[in-house]
Length: 223
Image (cartoon, rainbow, N blue to C red; front, side, top):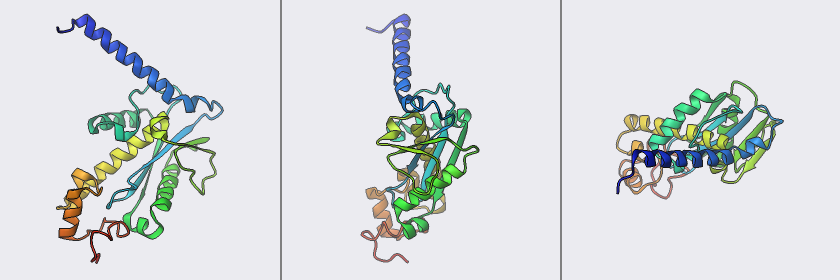
């Protein structure tokens, strides 16, 4: 039996209230540090792909932020990520992004490249935060106090926001790269090692945005 309009509205309100309760928990780390006026979430996207940069996001949300549905970007649909990206960019106190190229990844390894991207993202903020909430890592060479949180992108609203901004930014960039280097399917897999990507890599050979240190077991000639 179909629900009445009144019943549908009641269910909608119940779902909305449940989401507000979830988001209250997502801001628990931020509330635990009232001494910090500006708290910045940090996360990266693109450590695993065979091609493209690693991208880090740094996001400072306002203390009275009312955004809903923030979560680990991997748990959100592309449509929802795009919607939240717009909302984050409109509501955030500041957003910074850091990019490290495939060449640099090959030079210093992916972990150090990730740290570089995170430091760059912090440097691009328009204000200096008093505390960094990081997804799992402690970033070397940063003087701002840091709190690493395991699975932080699913536990902290600020880190989730950084995850979404970094993911949308990198996905858009890889979609653009699909037109620059056609044939690899970058728009579909965003550089990750899918079967289709590996098959194209073996057939076409690497392009300039492939990470040479990642593709050795798939191609022997990397010229």
